[in-house]
Image (cartoon, rainbow, N blue to C red; front, side, top):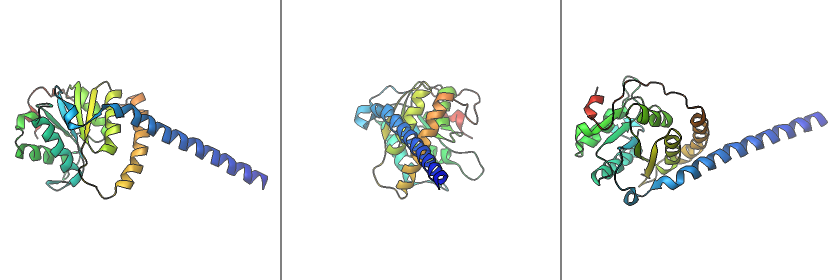
Length: 219
């Protein structure tokens, strides 16, 4: 009986330590990123690109979350934040293509095709930021995603050496947000570790500077 009590106490102590670490890292990441979250009015101008992070698509139609990100990114470009849009998302398998859906959405709303770049290998938030710097040669970026996700995106970008700011796009509520909030706590912990060891993304490749022609990223 004494042994069982000691084992139980040890397990509870380890669980408590893990919980403190997980929630402590989550708090740290959010606090480090918070000063760089801006309103659209505060964003200003002079960014190398507005980086819109991918999300789900339904065939050729963006999900509600992605549509809101795209509308905000387009609005920021039209208000002068940058001439260039960088669409970073998942196009890693046949039959699923976030970035072409994203580009078409922007071009249909008046953004010139040559000003819209596609990162076909933005398989994660960390990889999107890594590739924005190393492949697209961006230095100062304005990130657009929902607020719960924006903390991690900014943290990743700045840990990798980008001068990154962000604007949140969540004009409506989305189903399943509690699940995403819980998942994001773990994702912030993962990316906190990634920001220290800095692994290379799944794919790199030749540079395609975002200052150039976005049609070079067409497929």
